[in-house]
Amino acid sequence: MTAKPLQRTLDLVQVDPALSVLRLAAQYADPDGALDDDTLDLMYERVSAGVLAHLAPTAIWQELERGLMAVRPSRMLRVLYASGALPVILPEVAALFGVPQIADDPPQVDIGRHLLRVLDETALCDAPLAVRFAALVMNVGKADSPPEHLPVHYRHVERGAPRIHAICDRLGVPADCRDLALLALVEYERVHRVTEMRAGPVAAMLERLEGFTQPTRFKQFMTLCACDYGAYEGRITQNYPKAKLLCSALKACEGIQADDPDSLQEARALAIAVAFRSERWGGR
Image 1: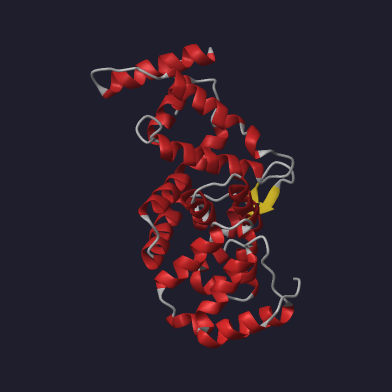
Image 2 (image 1 turned 60 degrees about the horizontal axis):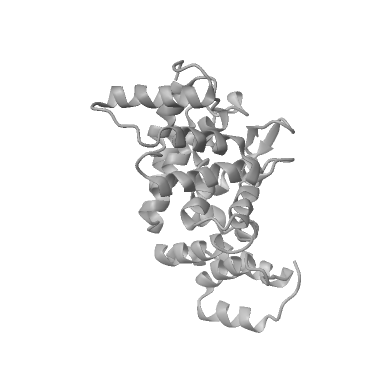
């Protein structure tokens, strides 16, 4: 980490030792952010002394938001982890480092390290806060998957939902951030696997993703999935094929109306099947 004048840092540490740890980490995510080893050591000492124990949750969230919305949010996470602050303020996220997950090439990735790459992809896309927060927490249910199942994470959704709720309640996270994170927890891996072979499951997925009723949230969710895709080696976020597939399916359903939900779903599946030249129904 490159050096910087220490006076501003020392002034902040003296005024508010707890806030200074988070503020410095958030500032490190800015384009001109820098920390020297002495400052990082000082942050570690402050955390070890327990200064974060009495910091107001609202203050924690303000600094997290600042860092998440910066140009390199991964740098904030790295400093929080190195200083020991991340396990204090976000133990659910800190526990993801060192946990393996299935990938393509290489066949496994460290979830925590992958998370850092996803966050930087969201910044490159200039994604809103809800997308960046969802990227931060959508895998928290995988932290304690049974070792005998790794790198597979059975029932992580059931473990993850209460943890996301707990993080949001604890820090006062805005509702739109919470809602997108919960949606991502359940659906983002399904989106990565979706195909155009059977239109019925695609229509059902669009319904679950609220593509017909919440276009802004749907767009944010597609951005998040694209960023997760682009964070893997050799992939490009802007070329995410599942976003093109689902957006094409959504367009095929424009203007469709029906008297009851079953008829509506049937009509949408037929429209998607025609657009994709695929089967109308199949296993969901």
